[in-house]
Length: 154
Image 1: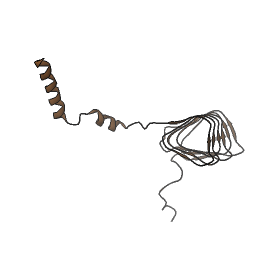
Image 2: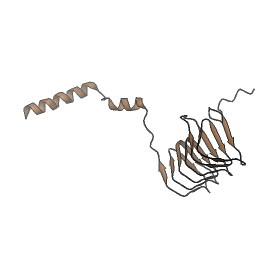
Image 3: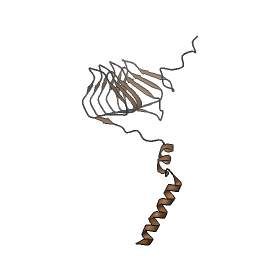
């Protein structure tokens, strides 16, 4: 009955809410899901977690940079935004700074007063090692042999 839903709306690591009545001075590091409805005067950074999510709610304000895999903004950010997986700018979003993203969704009414910078996806180590290997070892050895033969005939 209650355990049937498999897709959890919150990231692993817990859920933290900064209420409207809260104002934080200083940098914040978090894991899981962070909802900002108050004011944060400092940078916000997700710890090394691929599913960390920050939501800046409609009344929320961040005066600093945000670094997280998944970011949803519907309030104000006075600083740069770095979303390594997914960024959503809702209708009441206002970002005064540069936006670095891999995938972006932007709804009519959202404002970005800065540059949009696409982040290239870095290949996984397995993909890099496969790309570095020659496709056919026989072709590589015959190419070496023909290059050596060409030098000998010169």
